[in-house]
Image 1 (cartoon, rainbow, N blue to C red):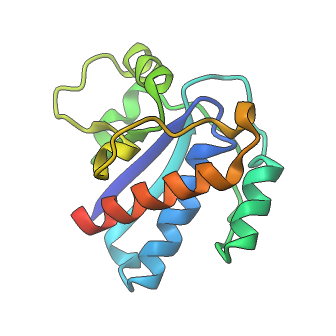
Image 2: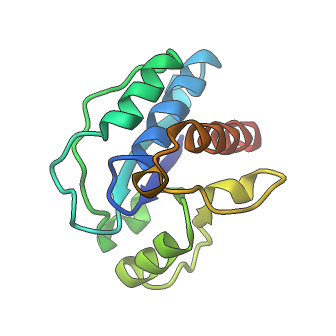
Length: 148
């Protein structure tokens, strides 16, 4: 079982997008029984909120099912539950270190580091560009699935 937690700042844009994209890629590959996938935030700003309407709209246009989700914050005691804790940008890395402390098992990585073009996934909350975020999330999730 591959247990993956996607993390971003608020858990309403990028990490939920990655969660639903990865779930769909796994479904299409016929590997549902091999994965447990979730998402969480480093902040408490959006707790309880549903995915951002821009994320929902983009995923629907791409034919990706949007499941029920409410933003939540990752907890220190979750570290042992996940095989991969995958963040979107440098700010998320800092937030994860603050919450989790050290990463003794090397579980924490940046999504696009799984691809041939390591970089941050831009936050569409600020850019408004959900298309660019989707392209990055899709590339990262495809590379992650191929590696696993």
